[in-house]
Image (tube, rainbow, N blue to C red; front, side):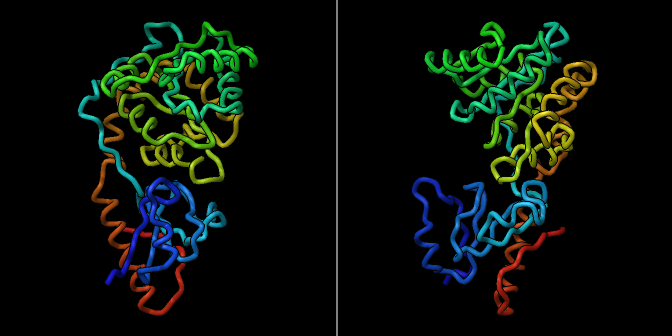
Length: 294
């Protein structure tokens, strides 16, 4: 007899949503594996947190009731991560922005916004990683060219092994986030390497993932609510290298003492959420959204 059944796949390969549609458990929830609603009325709850899906902001996009945990995810740094180095711009004399996103995230609107950033900071360059396809490199360079950014301001790197990928952050001052599917692992690794991320938040769960990560580590001021604010953030930080260098030097310590490095907080929040779901069902009440407060 299963009391509470949790989906960890959503609409991804080899999911079990058909089984959930038959409702084999009296209480069913979805968590982690898919950053959106399952669309199934037989799944009662979706586990999130107050930064990713603040109460009332995304509820209308879900068939499930939203449960805000204190923190819905944690981060385990790679053992291969090298130490943080000094801010590259201090010796290079220019800001180096970077993207380590999957190429499929780099749509026309993303390129247009990044071009505005590069135009606002004329001596900056953009490092673009995970680019194995030479034809794709040429296509991206052409897209930037259409927005007034010359090819010589772009530096391409292929996909690298994890140690080399992490070490590549030693050349980077600021990571530019993509949208509407914002970064997760890219943001975690960048922050651990001392590199802050500028993100554009939005009104869908994938669009808010990176914003939630930044808010959990105390970098809510790196979250832009508009494209204009995104460009302004890049301009402001590029003009204050001493402040950016101080942030870089202390960022790993800041993450270490954040909720992202407290798996026990996630575990306690999950335990309390499951108890509340079960008690609610035992009382004969319909599912409802709630927030877990430890």
